[in-house]
Image 1 (tube, helix red, strand yellow):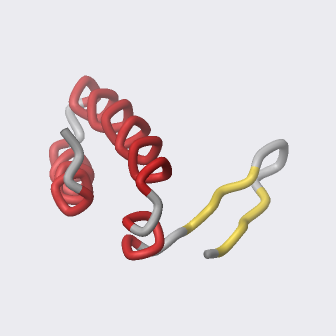
Image 2: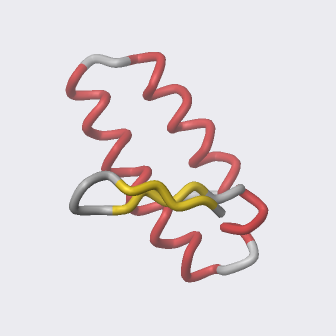
Length: 62
């Protein structure tokens, strides 16, 4: 897990295996990925939408 300062916030990078170990974390990550997916679809960014959808599939998001 890595922390990166982004001014007034932090960005956290975690591996998929770390996320999968904690069901409550998986649920939160899936919620964020769903919002991100909806946003990039509205923007028309197909390539990024595919990558987010792949991450959602790998985590078993509903």
